[in-house]
Image 1 (spheres, rainbow, N blue to C red):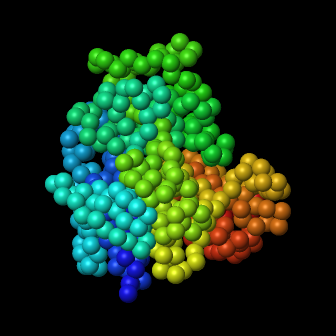
Image 2: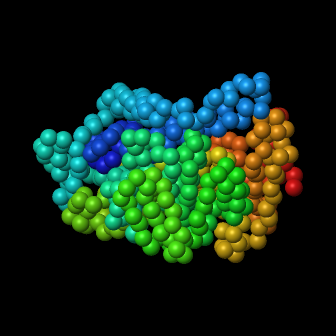
Image 3: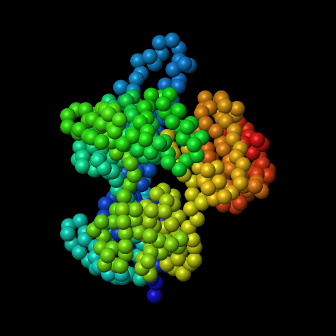
Length: 454
């Protein structure tokens, strides 16, 4: 008899798990309380990239001005962009991808249950459907992939109704003239990049001393400098002491007395595990706002219950969730796979793009390792100069024996190129191995080649 498995959540952790389970012969059902595809498809990765693409097109047009005949295109401005059309394009992208995913599940004959699953014991869930109907489902194993929701730190949490977040920003009724973004991490910077590109005044407020916490200082410096040149203003290491959310302009007062005003305040300061009201206590599971603890096999403290993606707090990235979902599925069906977070690429899709993997210099030295770094700037790369994409660099981190420990890319197609270096980290390749590759000319990848010769 095949194992009965319940997957709770259809995002990038849940749906790959369900597909893998079906492939391995499990009797699998996937339960979704909201939109099929989860946060990533509906309110995160995909819609934000649709917005960023719009911003990048506007940014690229501005770059063409110097090549136009006198007077040509002089009337173009970002004021000509239609906010409703921008939103409609994003909605169309989501609808197309969601439909494809649903058709895939139909073709694989995987049961999709619309409703909210609540544990009623360590081997059973109660599912409440859209019309209030309920059903109980026993299981041999369960995968919890419920994702996260936007988190509002104090004092912003007292004004959630008046402010916006990374979920609700896509549906703002009108394009604001100014936005204050709370949070200098990936979420905050991507929205800052988009809004700035389409003519919105943008300021970023970050409690920590710098943006992109955990990234190499060379990376954060390059990104911050690029944003500032385009008019984005940063307020770093400042605590908010007061908020006035009434009226057309919202006001934030900082601890040093500085007052910041904007039409919209977008809180993008992290996310909290979406686990409230799921009956985890009835299953014997302990949890907090960061999620449920698991081992490297994705197994919780309760036999048969696994947690993948954002709800386990290991790596809040869609591609991490997908790998974890597949690992959990394999282990449920008798496998023994572990998740390796050292090879997870971390990406920022603003411009300049950022891609990093493995250890940076500070992280390696904190582990007691003796390291060497090599860096090459795009300013010296033919393709970068020809396409006017000279911002950024490729930086590699090597151990004493020249083993590749990590890499950081800024600029160009960093989020695409980082996979070559992720493979190098995984296979423990050495500098000489990467130098043996032939790098096509002219390409942006030649920055990696140049760094290897430093």
